[in-house]
Length: 196
Image (cartoon, rainbow, N blue to C red; front, side, top):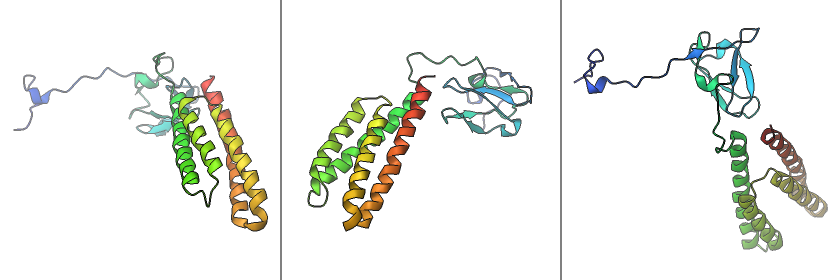
């Protein structure tokens, strides 16, 4: 039997009510003003209605309601979002996720370095395991500087030692150097996001 939406006594026809949408706020160009949960205000054109728009500051998707010309939901209104002061910011959650990825990667590479001691250096493996553990314990954007320094040091060593004997190791060293510089940029990005 189908639910009867016209019958208020039919339990299958119950639909929870949603709060009425609040009026949209617009800038002087007619763009909808949005506020991300990270606290960044930005605008978007109405043709993005019923889509997600990434926040330019943190990259988290902000939903645009179907009728952006008439209303927006309270979660994206400027000055309407009151984040829980105990909850970690989206930027902190993103940074901690990146640190966990580094931790897992360093533990795996460190374990392989020890297991394949005939091919890789077990001393580096032990250091990578220690750094992997620290990346789970120290949840600070300064860890990206440590990762960058480690990559640059390893890149210089691989380039210098492998350049003559093995061009493959030299090329890998160049990749590590570039990657190390990117980690310094990642530090700057997270440091700026966390100190807003």
